[in-house]
Image 1 (cartoon, rainbow, N blue to C red):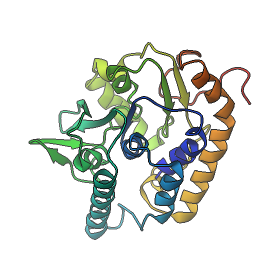
Image 2 (tube, helix red, strand yellow):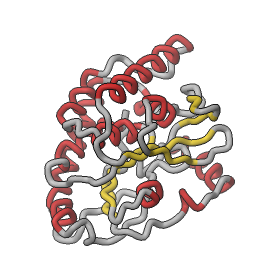
Image 3 (cartoon, one colour):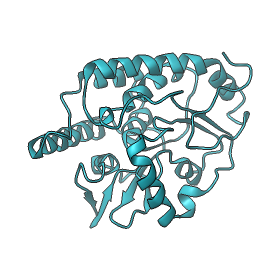
Image 4 (cartoon, rainbow, N blue to C red):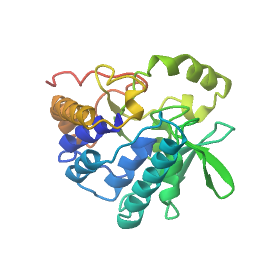
Length: 259
């Protein structure tokens, strides 16, 4: 549900930044598909506000209902809006825990479902005989995937630069055990990284639909987008080749001189 904040940020920035390719993982995969399909950010905001009740903490029936709603959401998006820009979706092989980049004309709604399948709360999604889970499980911000697709500069809207505390130690241990170049490499292109300046909420809140919280996160995203607007305009006007390369995994401050 933290993705509502991401949609709020993009609703401000889409008018000044035109990407040539889009990459996403987890809820970012849904937004990446929408952006690549040129879905207006206003439509994204309305989708968030109109989302039906969604919770993974009240028993098997709720899990089944959440899975059905996720499937419906992904099918509707993928079947009615096809990408017009190059699109990459990151999923995680299960149980090998290897990140996998999918791109090209064969992308389908199943790739969206797989990239959003939170381990232990939603079942893995099978694609071509291999099971996949949440694309952000081993690294929430797939800069490496954009780099592999040929990005020469990156504007990254990072919804989870600060992991909720119950997830920090186990995920760090897993990432150390399964260390792989693709998620630990440093991307050597100019990168502007935008993240919330503070935690958006608890890990439980991130998995339960609450219309009041969603509206608040959208507004916080809009506010953050406005704070970055001038810096992003300069980044775009320079051909996306100006500005420092920032490390992924933490919230960054705007470029010097921006509001």
